[in-house]
Image (cartoon, rainbow, N blue to C red; front, side):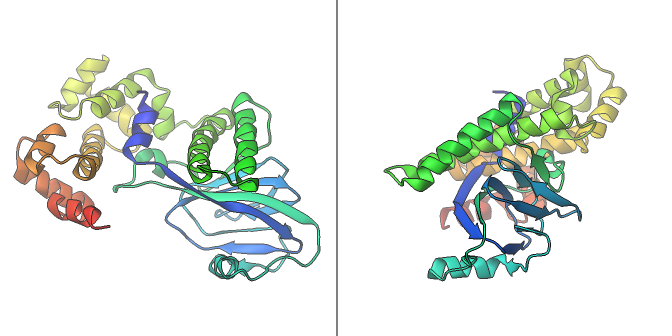
Length: 304
């Protein structure tokens, strides 16, 4: 499995498609800060987004905006339209109360969010910008986004057996293509995505991710990828924004979180599986990273 796929599997990417929204102008929403990564896809009509960094983005039909960190932002037919707080909008929709149906020009959006389990947050997610604007279909990955959107619309318009699962899978495909399309538009010079483009740093990441139980040291990793210890350390930290051994520790804890939920082996066996021969050391590091002991973490997830 490639390094990014391994990361997405380990962070348990999950997605939720809210609905297809037909909104009559004038309309606007103030989106509150949320722990999930949100997306909006303009199917038809007009749409303006107020970015978390203060920019105003005019969307064309087919454009998509992705807010990786769930930052507060706004969306409306125009920047001057009155805006309703998103919790009120959700409450009204659930109650069946009509909103934004005044007879003006109709805008159709598909909206949803992506969820990522486990703390500490992976550098891949931390390094994404506050908002990503993917313009309408030019490249191959953007054409794939168009096809995914069309399939989503079919499922939303014609609910059939298995539609919820179809929408979940389609939105996860959408996420991968958002990242691919972003990389076509922007070539980051630092951050996790740039690390994936560095052959030797990418190899080090793959070694740690594929074999976390190995007794990795700075020296052994540098030797495996053919770099000096100091050059490896500096290059890794520059690109990933974590030291190699910090990344390794965080990766081991993420893997442990996954195993504690999905594997019935005892904690000492899981500790060994992720690279800790001492259960006491594993417990101490796990709690420092998650705020819970491994046993408490397992119980909390079991009773959810």
